[in-house]
Image (tube, rainbow, N blue to C red):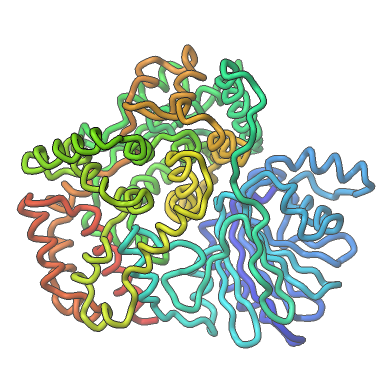
Length: 631
């Protein structure tokens, strides 16, 4: 099994000769994804060249890549894990297939030979792969259902170039690196750039749960799976047992490893459940290793809760105190993530992955629990808003207006959140959800961008895209609309990008049991009253693991893996923020109004308002522009 790897290559649209040296150089940009081994491939007709880097987890002595079938027809480069590969292997063997390795890479070759592109519907795992078919003269590019593993590509006049990360594509001599102002407007609106767009006009991302066949041109991107609700065939009183069983199966399938394995433990309910199930699966052997990152600021520090849980399950526990590094934090994020990425928790995620890698090669996480089981406050907000009658609406609006002058200017303040909730009530449900998620509204972008940009680009487009995505679903309640929206974009385009890059930069493989498609669809299908009440979410998890998880964990309200970015920008990162953002040459050079940025900085430093996440997004963007100026 390849585990976490990186690959890059090119495929010509017509007979010719791809360059294997270029493919190897591109793959060398991904050495952090695969420090254990390298490989390369050039097809006999010369049309396809692939470079590969491997991090070996299962079957380290074998499963070398790129891997070619025994008859020489098929070759695959594969990044990820197929969790049901043993079951698939048995089925293929019964049909006459013969295997030369013990890993999951070879499964892909036999599955494709038997089922072609339809093989994707049989795979349970996280993956991105490129599969060359010599007989058909085609290249199949595919990505897993939830988008755990990335796949980037760009089309030139005579070929397609593909890679696991953008930095490899940008090393290709034929690839242009023209910034996309349209994509930057999306970034400033929601904090990330959603698929299929990227920060560069010529570079694309293959969306989750899709594939593309390339021959004499790039074929259409086709979706092979969409998360849906499904009937739950059990009595209401048996739902907790069903959830417990499905999560147990998902954890066990992700504990298969020939190298040390641990878990990232936040102290919240999701990662606590994963550790509890891991400990149960490990049994008497024990030895589960857990890792936690925390901060000096008490409101953001999960270390005490995680420490108590580690003691409860007798894990081998490691803690990391996260401090900002003014000299290099922003540049580190920019170098890792290639395109601008505004999620400030990327830095502590990378640090805890780096600490974990000193002890283990694989770690399980609780990613996906909020999306599957309704953990976010904003889910409850849109659901409550949808149920307010005229009297409730008037009361909420009146209370919000009364409280507004006294609400603290802190994003985590309960009063401030209530004011934001009541301010959103006059708008349609999709707009309400957008207001819970946005960094800058389109009106604020009009003020931020220069007049030339505001006239040339439709700055309402990100807002319209966001609301259109929300409305394209068909559910009985707003709670499920919000869940599906996050599963469609926030999860794959923000959270999973964060964890993939942060872990791969440390050569650590992360696995997320709650991202099992079965678990995701189960969560979507649950009745609302099993997902959230007025005060807290994930009610079914609290019920299912009562008596297994300590009560103080189950009773906690969600805090999330937040970062005290607002405080850091007023203290440790203040000088860097001012040096970069208040430099008028930066603003004018990169199409912003200097006075607009200066106003944001002044209001934040004075405490008049909390613009921490907005200023962090601008700071990352400024450094990204500077890094890419030479390109």
